[in-house]
Length: 198
Image 1 (cartoon, rainbow, N blue to C red):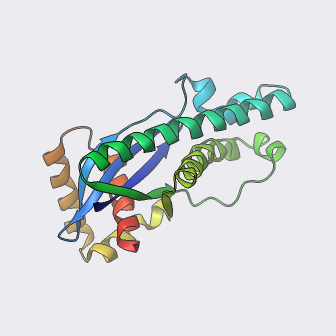
Image 2: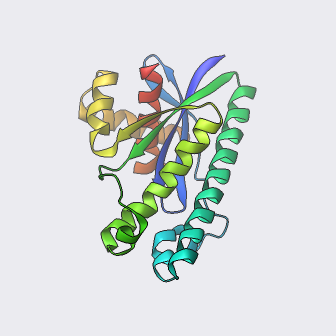
Image 3: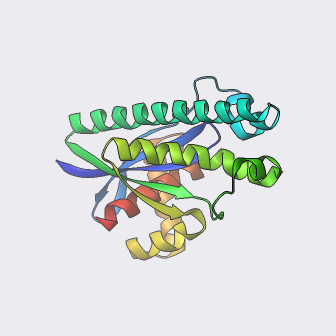
């Protein structure tokens, strides 16, 4: 079995997912998806901390926990689906790369809900943590990379300049069709870093 890895770039309630292998030292996408991490794709569920702020404290805490559990379940299903797809094609998927924010660790819930900026941060972190937890449960090793460090680290790992990296990523997109946005490009690079680390 050839090695493959997943890359994730998370948004509120969904994630860009790209599976890659390395061919001649450069990432080759194998599949891509945009799985939802909530069953009801509305603001209420996609932004659980915003929603919790409008509820009594205990209800808000319970709501966040339910959304987190659901996100982990849906993340695990997306990862298992990718594993099955790739295994049928001769690839072993046992690692992933996850893009992270540069934020400091979050404080307790009361302080989060008192700050609009922290609410936004917490909403994003909930989905990243759900993916981390789902990967751990499925035996998939996770490499976390700060998004602001991604291009520099990828360029170093692939031994290419920033301009060459941008050009080669654009070429990959033409070969694989749409969508091929910055989400897919960055998910590809972080997956590549997780493979290079192995």
